[in-house]
Image (cartoon, rainbow, N blue to C red; front, side, top):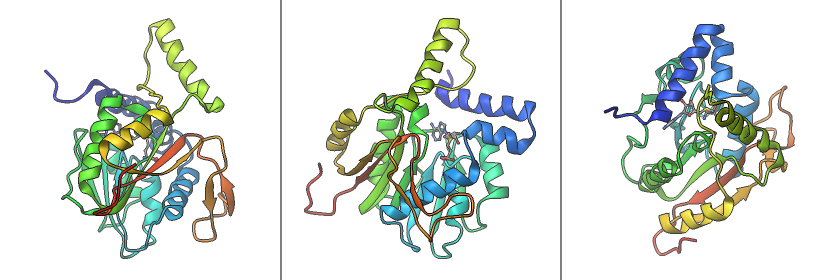
Length: 251
Ligand SMILES: C[S@@+](CC[C@H](N)C(=O)[O-])C[C@H]1O[C@@H](n2cnc3c(N)ncnc32)[C@H](O)[C@@H]1O
């Protein structure tokens, strides 16, 4: 029996199919969905908005091609661990985005190879969108372990309340209708349920932001020519949870 979940294999298979059909940059862009710089700037801006410091230690689970990685190389004292299940994406990240001292590791899924209470931030951008709820929950248990007290986890998710995400769901339904599953799973979550998860896992809820509202502050510090200063939306919703400090209550 395989030691990897079907959806880990399906993500890797999708990346390999794109690499066989397109030039590398295009194949990788298709594999992670969307523009490298645009999403990198938005992800970096979210981290800054929710407390990133130049000396933070960041674990980026499902780091992929390095959209966030590349934005974080500007902080000489920041420590970074990027984890992913697809070797080809890690290899691209290593060549095109990461700094030599940034660590990039291949994982089998569901485990975070980091000591207890060692991270200021753990991120999952567009990762829980492709996992079963049980796997995301297990990742959040691990996240609680590796975060320092006061450390934060940021993850994005698909939710039905965001009209623009219905196309993703309708695509899933179409796969079922035609019995032709050509990609990876796309999973929806609900903010109300995630509040229950936060309570059970012992996190404090810091923020829920809908993907269709301009909730991301791109500042002088994070803007580029392509992604300018102002309020932007991610498309996906996102959530910020915090591991309480000793004596502090969870949600
Ligand atoms: C849509 S991409 C997002 C990549 C990156 N976070 C970004 O925003 O550019 C999803 C990423 O999650 C990774 N992934 C899929 N299943 C995973 C799992 N079980 N654990 C960790 N990463 C996973 C994929 O290989 C891919 O790199």
